[in-house]
Length: 197
Image (cartoon, rainbow, N blue to C red; front, side, top):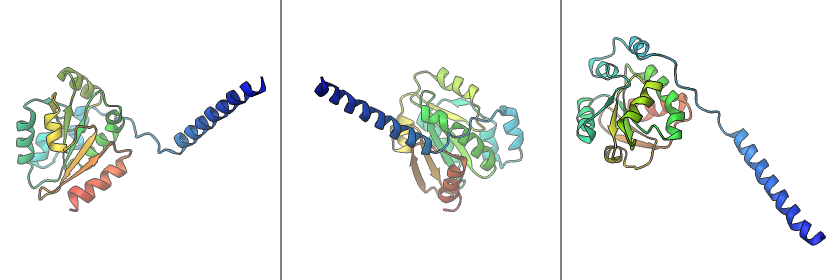
């Protein structure tokens, strides 16, 4: 009897140790990013009023999900040459994308008079999914619907989400894989790769 109880006891201790390690790692991890702002699109536009025309045209399409795929997205990026640009690839089903949305809402409001923000809804099965997501969590810039994922892969050089691409005024590109945990980290990269580059 003692021999049979020993493996069970050792197994129980091992499971308990793994549970404790997991709880310690969870407690030591960074805090969750802030929830999406409770601002309406009209309030966002009001905060960004007076932006230069190329950026104002983005704010006029706040939270819209635009069609046209890669050609439309490339044309928009071409129209923004000379401006710092941040492109965020997301999907409504992507949990890390949802977690970082509040970060992008706040950064786009803070930097939207100097930096162009654009989204790519890459891989949603239906355009209605992306539209519903943007109605629930509005942003001050438009996104392009990319059902096949081809536009997102072409722009971000990745099939994963979320991915953020920074363009400086000269068009140089920097790609960040994974979510942004805080507005401070996103704005640091905006300064480093889009504004100061």
